[in-house]
Length: 96
Image (cartoon, rainbow, N blue to C red; front, side, top):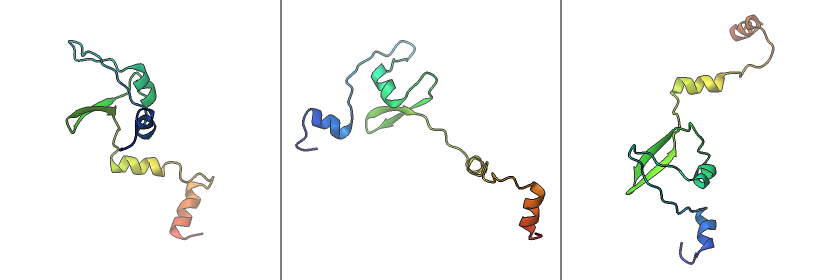
């Protein structure tokens, strides 16, 4: 952004980190603590690597639910009243 300098950039874009690490012979790298803390990357977090515009981006992996699973999650617990199943069925059929 034109006119932004130094600390203004951090306030505009958020914190920036200048860290360098070596990739081990096993292809592993340690993510610096400030970055893990800032983005909630805890041990066991699944991450994905994405190539974007000449950069490699590391981000937490989001699990995509299939539509049926998503619907079940939404529908679970919707009927929280204490009406019996028999009464609900009667209401559904228009018998009450």
